[in-house]
Each structure stands twice: as structure tokens, then as C-alpha cells.
Length: 122
Image 1 (cartoon, helix red, strand yellow):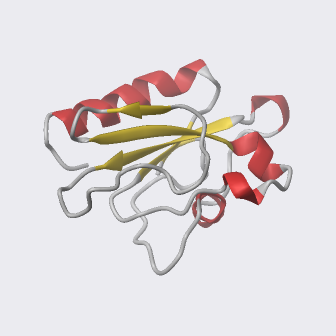
Image 2 (tube, rainbow, N blue to C red):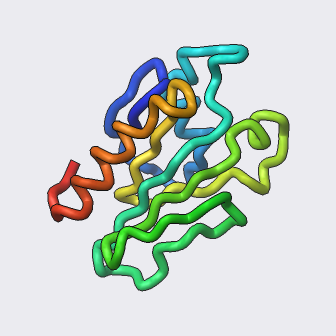
């Protein structure tokens, strides 16, 4: 998990963990109020073990990374307002990006995407 959380880092998934649960495990967002991100991105890799690399819920935009994976943009604002239908279950290898502000997440997302496209592990 990277971005606007109190304790960014690698967290092993134990059982069913959703985006909101992962953010809580990482200490929650560091910015509050108007600075709180309204979206969150999941970078989901295709490691070849599963042909389905898409989202299980109805996310926002999904950008394919060729045959390497996808970037899904989810509505964090809706989730925090109680619409848990937007809360995606995480899968092993997912990278959760919680932007500090809308535009500030772009370099982090690009770095994660570049790592995936080059075949390296984070």
C-alpha cells in the first residue's frame, strides 16, 4: 500500500480483505476533510495463475496494462459514505494506491505500472 496512509508498506493478506479494511489496517488516511482522496487505485497484476484480472465489483475506469494486469479506479468517497458495493476485495499481489490529492497520485501510479510492465516485483 502506498500513498496517503499512516503506515504505507507491504501487508500480507489473511482471508478476505477489502480496500476499506486495508486502509484501516494501514492506519487510515493521513489527510482529512477536503484533502482526503475521493478515489483509490488498485494495480492488479496478472501473474499467469489466473485468467481473470478484472474487478469483482462495478469499479470506475479500468485501464489494461497489456497482458500484465489492470489499474482499477474505485470511488473511495462512496465507500466512506456507506456504499460498500464499491468496496473491492483485494487479491494477493495487488498494490493499493491512496492518492494524497487527485494529481499527486500520478507519479506513484506510473512507478507501479512501470514496475509491472518491466516485469519486476515491488
